[in-house]
Length: 610
Image 1 (cartoon, one colour):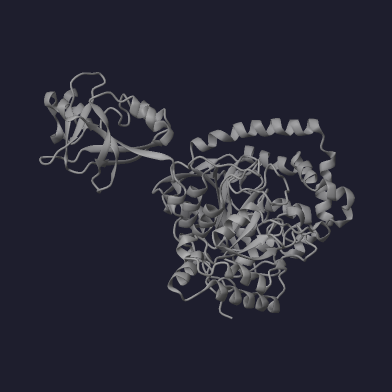
Image 2: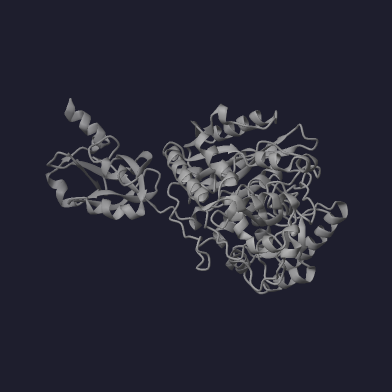
C-alpha cells in the first residue's frame, strides 16, 4: 500500500485544492493501520479509534473552510496517559483505567484547530522509563528495526508517526520521553518549555516537571502544533504564558552553541557515537554556528537528582492511592522504581531542593556565552532483548543527556542527524538542541535548518518515506518581543552612549547603511557630541548605521531619555527595509555642520581628532 504524505503542508495543500477530504483521509488511514497490523504487531496502540469514531471527527469538519483552521484534517495520536473524551485512559495499566468525560486541555485545543485524533498509544507504564518495553500491552517495537526498542516512555506515540499512521503525536516528557523515542525513530521531538502546553487531563508522573511533548515529521510541523495548543490554562497551576522569545538565534546567520568537553561525552560503548556527534557539530558550524566548549559536570549533577532524589517520591505520590491498594497491578520494574519513593524523607527533599538551587546557579552563566547547547539525544540504541536482560542500567544510560533538562527549566528539540551503520538496519542517530525557558521557536528554527542539511543522510527510510524537512517555523505566531532601532551617532558600539542600549539588554544585529536619501549633521554642543540625521528629497547620502534590537518593554524608557532635537522615527535602510531609528528635527540643522560627505559619525570623529 502506498503511504500517504502526512506532513502538515502536504495535507493542507491537498485539502485546499480539493484533491483530499478529511473523510477520505481517515478511511485511508484506517486501511493503513489494518495493513500494518497484518504485517507485524509492533504494539503501537492501546486503543485505536474505530473507523466510525474517526469518521465522526472528520464529519465535524464538513463545511468548514480549511483556511480558518490551522490543523484542518490533520491526524494525530495521543499517548495513553492523556485524556481523550469517551476513550479509556490506562497509563498502560488496565486496572488503573478510567473513561474521561472531557479531553485534556491540549487535546481540546488541537481538535478545535481541526486536528483529528486516531488513537491512544502504548507507553512505559505510568510514563516511567525511556525504553518502551514496560507495558502489559507488549513491548513497543522500533519503527525501523523491530528487534530494537522504540524508546520510552512515549513509545507508541513516536512509532505511530514514524510508521505513517499520524501526522504528529502527543507524548509526555519528564526525563527525556519526548526526545529519546524521537531519535530512535528518526523524528523531530519537541520538549517545550515547562508549562507552555497545559497538563490538565494528563496522568502525572512528576507533576512539577511533566511536559506534554510533540513528535513530528519536521520542526515546522512541531511549531504548528505548539502554536495551536500553547497557553496558560486556569485549571493547571503549573501552566504559564511565557514572555516573548527575544532574538531568534536559530534563524540568524551566526550563533554560538555549546558542545560538551570531550571528557563529558559518553557513548556507553557505541563506537559510532563520536563520529556521529562530530558530524552534527560540523553541520551546525556550516550553518554559521561557533562551537563553545561547555563543562557538563553541573548538568550531570542535576541529572542524578532526578532518580536519586525526591522526584521519585513525587512519582509515588502521583499514583499513591492506586499503588497502595493494588501494588501487584504494576509492571515489576515500574513498581520497583516507584516504591523507592517511600524511603524519601522530608529532610531529604529539602536537601535535594537546596542542592538543585545551587546547581541552577552554577549552570546559569553558561547561557551568557552560548545561544543553545547541543548534545547527543541518546548515547546509543539497544535491542529489546538487551533491555529486558538489564532494564535499569540501560534505561539510565539512555537518559544520560536528557535528565537535567526539566529540572533546570530548559526547552529542547531532538533532531535526526544520521544513521548508525552497525545496526543491521541502520538505526537512527540524532542530537538535541537545548536552550533556556521560552526559547522554543529559536530552537525549532535551528532544528529545521539542521534537519534540512541532513536530508541526504536521514531523509527517507523504507518505513517512513515522507520524513523530509519542512519550512522554517513561522515567527509570526511566536512574537519576539523585540524592537529594532537604527543608531547613527553616540549610541554606536564603543561610543559614549552605547551603554544606554546594552544596559537594557540590547544586542547588535547588523552594521549597515541608510538609503541614500539622508543628510548627517554635527549638532552644536557636547560632550557627548551628537549627530542629527535628516531625510531629504535630493542631495542625500548613505549614512553608516548600526541596527540594535532591545526588549519592547525597555524601548519606552530608552526613547524617553532622548533629548530634543533628536527623536525616534522611521528610517529606511539601504536594502529598502524600514525600522525605527534616530532622526532630527529640521530646525536644528540650520545651525549645524553638514558632514554627509563623510558617510557616517565615526568618520567625522576621526576627522576632528586629526
